Length: 212
Image (cartoon, rainbow, N blue to C red; front, side):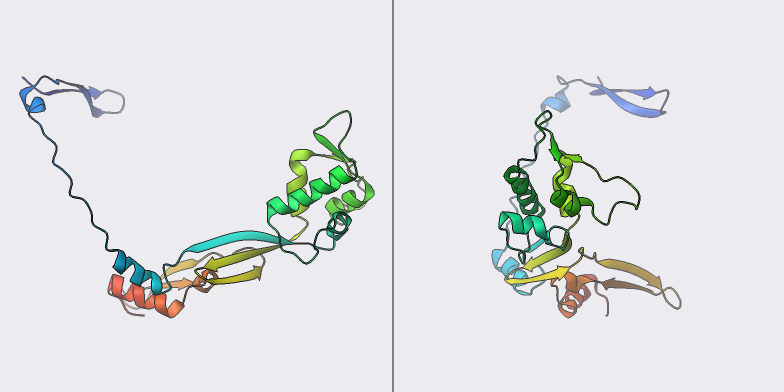
């Protein structure tokens, strides 16, 4: 008596499991092996962390008020020199909307654009000769406001932290072929994430038995 039944899928031309006879002696006698518990050497992990390569990394996008949005910040008493998250920036513009009572009475999902808010969102971005919008949907207001601010990012690794202007640059990994069959892998941009290039190269040399 067979323990399993199979059949061929005529469309995919593959053999698939059709059924299992659970009363088969081999099935009933099967006992799974117990897995051995994996022991973690916490001391070793701490040593690696202290090398500066595997410290906890945190990256966040933050934004600085620009000339476009400064009047909104000033109107609600927000700090013009403060770097804030997208959520915090969105809270500021909605505070202004509440302060100036700009929610459209006949449609609570829309915000009426007064001259200050309209300039903050669209001055310099509307093609010459085109009409400026008179209202904006609430769901679009926060992102539109943030897009008019100066993008920055903050990188934190362990106790070290740095703020840089612009979007976060990614690590680049490129493999090149040299004379013969020799290959060279170049890694750039690790400093962006507060990683010591020499320490990383040394660690990779040990892990992959290569030179640098």
